[in-house]
Image 1 (cartoon, one colour):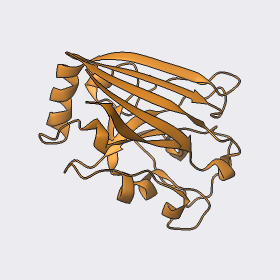
Image 2 (cartoon, rainbow, N blue to C red):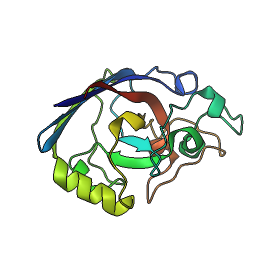
Image 3 (cartoon, rainbow, N blue to C red):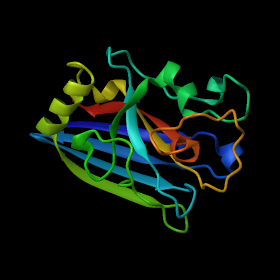
Length: 186
């Protein structure tokens, strides 16, 4: 059994008015990956995309901080995270093993901004899809970071905030929390 953990800390909290935080636990046991994510103080009653990000070449990803606000608009948007965190890789939605990122199958926070996500993922299917998309790269959880995304559509974002994905605008993709995934037991 292999165990990985991430302490998820706020990102963009000054700009969005809430300090989303939580934790993630990843357990590889035989042919399954069990993912447990628990979040507090996220924007309430909103769907929150969650993924791990990283570099396909295996470089270790790092978490974005306010220092990544390259255009100095007060927000670290999705494109500004890429130099330190890499690209969106595996979604934590209703079927992570399909690697289908842009959809409406992510957790929704309750009225207090809380949500919990648990999913048992078939590891062989996830690994095959991951290798197909990222050209034989390994999952390498300890080289990845987890992001939680999403603010209310009513939040006034400057026109400089980017991050549209398919039909979803930057309100959906704006990072609100991030954590470095670290090995606990290998």
